Length: 459
Image 1 (cartoon, rainbow, N blue to C red):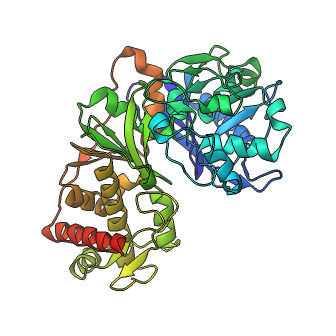
Image 2 (cartoon, helix red, strand yellow; image 1 turned 180 degrees about the vertical axis):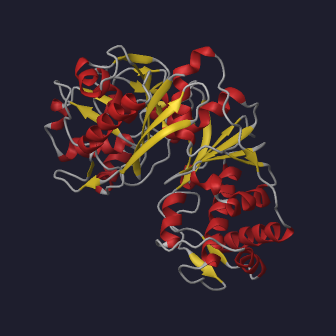
């Protein structure tokens, strides 16, 4: 048996998972909150806290189970600026900071069009190009201090190996820095003056190198332990399916963000105003995608008072058509700048009815995303929403497509671990469970919700 340690940094939590290389099952997991530090100079991720946590976890996992390789997956929308000594030239900006909005007009004047990058114009720092532009404007000495720019998975690889890189899945995650159709950097890198600073992209499965001697000494790992380049987390969820499923299909990766990625679907004219975009998969191919902050929305709706819905709760929500109309987070997703509202009335906090209605809402927004990207074929749900039967069933009702719930605790760790075995054939991973139990009442509810949304958009 061989084991892959997967560094998995999500927007909400940082995680270290130990994954069996052959079965892709998780053997051990430790997590910590991905806390944002307030600054100065700006709100930033606690990378040093993560680093200590990761090294402690690597040491513990190796002592108990053994580690044969390391892979990395992280959230997108983050680049890291390194100085000439390999340290941080500046703290890693939290992409939800509104600072870049202050110079939006100046950035808009230099960013490439959607037709070049497949990257929509997003608020705050959700475009990495906007982050860099704002940080350079805020700290005029920063361009000179910046020797190397790496994407976020590769930052952790750099700390482990000393080798700087980027990868196509992270560059292709609405950075404005990549042309997914040509497989090259976009014209923005020249306008930002960073063409000679951005580390060269490498395939996610490529080995960056062995761990540094000081890492081996600190963790007890063998000095020749390989570290693979790494991958954007949504594309990590997508990878096992790209390698093992026949197109067309769509993978819905859930967490703080819900990312829908259509493989081999119908042709669709993507609308950047509705948060559609082109991702790039681990093979370097463009993938029409859409997204919204579904996990964040669910937390907001429930407000910490989760109650599992009973059959009676579900029946009441369906029978009375108790609905939440979009959008809770209105600055991203397919229904931007719309104010959320309940109809005909709002269920009380802490009730099963509220949880059921929230699950239905999330499924119906997901279905809207699928329509926008030309979805066809079965839908595979990865991550926490896969364990939400009401969400999965309403997704079937809204799309008329089969929905497969992934059995893993997260698809990201599986996909990142799969990078380690990419040269020895396809993975024998659990294909998930096809959901059932969709009622006519659910289909009627989905139709009514869509009509209410269309009516609201017309006003």
